[in-house]
Amino acid sequence: MKAAVLRNVRDLSIEEIEAPEPRPGQVLVRVKATAICGTDLGIYTGKSRANLPLVPGHESSGTVVALGPGARGLSVGDRVVLNPLLFCLRCAYCLAGKPNLCVNGGLMGREAPGTFAEFVAVEDYRCHRLPETVGFNDATSLVVLSTVFAGHRQITIRPGTSVAVVGLGSAGILHTQLAKASGAYPVFGVSRSAWKLELARRRGADVTIGGGDVVKEVLRHTDGLGVDVAIECAGKAETLRQAMEMTRPGGTVLAFGILPSRLGDFDGFDLYYKELTVVGTRAMLPEDFEAAIRATQRGLISLDSIVTHTFSLDELKAAFDKVETSPGDVLRVVVEI
Image (cartoon, rainbow, N blue to C red; front, top):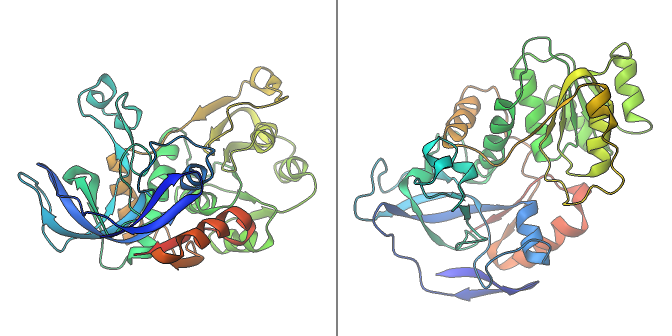
């Protein structure tokens, strides 16, 4: 099969390698589309660890083409989106229903072969059937949407809850939509990108803020109190600080963006003074995939306009370059395979 092989930092080549055989309980999936996310870029550039050499990629959709011995719940021809998490089903966290925290776990394209390849073998329970209304490219965004649902399980948004979404990448746009679908009002979208702010408005943001003192603007629209919930999606110390400053006393901050290991001169005084609750969130649970699929089927969430650029597998290096050098121009880059 044709696959991308990353042998060292930025040392990526398209090669012919042996296709995997599904083991007991696995299915073989013909990969149709794989998106590039920040983790993939970090592995490619050497900023994130990985078991090199390997096939990278993990946010994927495709078609089941073969069943391994004992595989259940799927048929050849099923269109699926893949849960990229690896989990053991035996540790305390897995047994407690939290496989996203599995102590023996990992990620496709990092600890195990990934999906920038024509075929991948995965456990049957990591495949979720796609509705016919969702194409393969858009289906890759269901992986992100599942993490958004996971994040919202950690917080409380009711009708009338005021919410600020800081950072309007693909996850931020999806957070905006889910907050609106949950009855939040007003929903603020915060970004330095004019076109992302416009997309956020089309997806339900009541107020968009694109420059100047963003905290001051949020406070101005909330009678000086701040929002009930701030969702930080940029993964930066500066934007986490802004999220905390724009949240009302007793409010909640969801640290959704993957933060750097060090926060520099980060000031955590608001944690004490405003009695803030800051919540972390990691990946997703299987039920978050099902919730994401149902929300899309029912029209509560639109995946339209999330994928902004497409490349072929042979163009994977160019796709990585696009994500790395022009982050302001992209929401989601998908590689068609």
